[in-house]
Image (cartoon, one colour):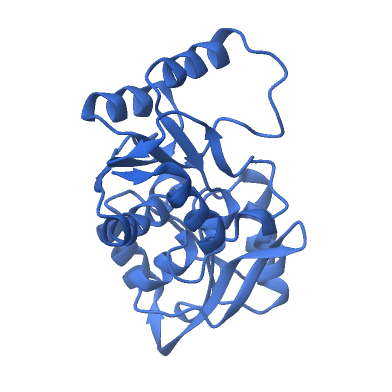
Length: 251
């Protein structure tokens, strides 16, 4: 058994929790048991992930999308049911949103590049004055279809490829999840391919007119990577049991 706050302190420091201007209240959102033996991991805080984590016997659930975004105005309805379940079962809830997108080793974006055999070269995707994504380059240009197929296979998901630029890609920018805000930045930096999770309607014509290739690999799928990469790290450091709870949204 490991003291809860030993794990929380490690995560806060390792992920630089307090350095990001984020709507998510990152860190320990709900406090439960003081000792941790089993840690479950999931993309989203939801009744499904809470119930499955509790059924497995988790003491702590670590998620990318937490419960608290900006604050809680009322404790009623859906919020009441979720909090009641966590508190009654003494299930700790820890959230890491932008910090887990941006981390250079275990972050969603660094891990996305790793799937393509790439390493982060420079920061990308300015959000609130802090970059959450990365730019990388292939040594030799790769065809768009090869990249799309590789991501589809390794993420086990459907991807959408928008071929608005050159067929052979060398420079790649990544922002997992809802990264459409970085579309213009990718165009201005002359990036060949922008990889994100969801590609929004309002960004379509920007990319097309800017000659920017885009691959949308799924909001959920692209954000499974960060929590998954935390699992072996915490297992080795604290000797805990770990479990990934897969609850895909199809988005």
